Image (cartoon, rainbow over all chains, first blue to last red):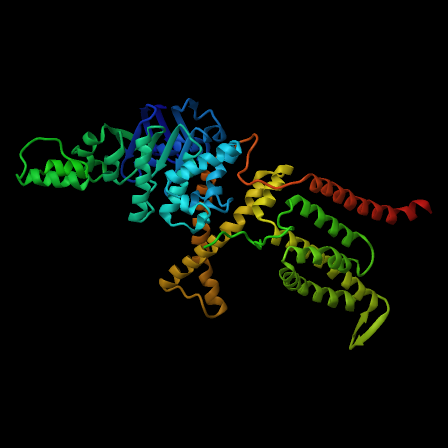
Length: 278
Length: 265
């Protein structure tokens, strides 16, 4: 689904590359989380997958970027649009402003793709219930809370059924309740296995629950890559400016205090922690 | 907050359910007649016979009258003063000090105000009885570019958000001790700390919204579909063509009438 080879990218007038010789392969159906400190290149990677690097931001891109069978640097943004769905942090800015209700807002992408009316209606109803927005369907998109708006943004992208969905810190501007609502939708998305998902995220506790694979970015490079249990419990996280989940921290504290002697795998989720401390 | 449709007044009426282009054609015809047919009182006659009954049918007559009155009054006053008193020469009706009110100027002002009345009231009748998205959809089907529809629709929704943001910035700067009230100099000095954050954050917003639009295939060429369905009937299509022809006929007749004497003599 994703095939990146030696990708290096400089933003215009930048002297330090945002991506430095990055190679990555993601098979179809995988839910892949990208973690890393601020400035590690998470957003740039997301924009590269969706074609906004280099088509929107310009700058200098070298290497091979192939997403959903599309040669990204050679294709136009319009050609990539149906193939890659992008959701980013600010929920308000993802509302087009060209439609007056939540239902019509979701329809906007389908209208542009020329989806026939009957199919459009069916797909909108499906996605409304998937994102738990059915009751809000006739409201103004601007009258929603941040969490609801972000679910709307996700629904608006998912309804277009792009083979690849990219989410760039979708909860970073939301309150805890809004974040929880969005993560609930992402967990359902992970469970369907229909779409390939790349999620850039700082909240490792959530990543640990539903990612198939975790990639750590540092200074535009991949420095760790593997199943969440391995990557998130590794001792290297702090040197990349990341804080392990509180479950891992608690387990490590217990080890240090001599409460636990066994060399069992450190927990990264609540369930694993319960198991670990039994 | 309920859905904000701009000027649209939601009512159940035959006028509301007409196809937007039918209304557009009818109003275009009225406008052509009122502007082109000579006569001081022509625009007022068209207003009374063409706009008022339809406004009543559409249950927006009070809105039209008050809206048109408010919009036309300042123009009418300035027309009356400028044209009535500063008409170069003509029949003097009334002498007020050094100024003389002239008949020709007065009639010119009345006709001018009538034309403005027609321009305003046709715009208002269309806006009050037509949802903006239905209008832009109809225009899009005529071949008007998508981006123009986007500008019209997003303006209605994003400008109010812009105002909210301006208020937030104003409050934030005030809470940091910025003086925004007082003499002109104090106010002028407060301008930059208000405008700059608003402008910079808006640029970021626009960049992100452009990305969001591209993600939703806004830039894609080729046929588009619409969730919104416009109700149209054969007789409305016929009526539109007739109105369009009639409007063109009136204009052509007027041009002919103006030019013919010159060619014939």
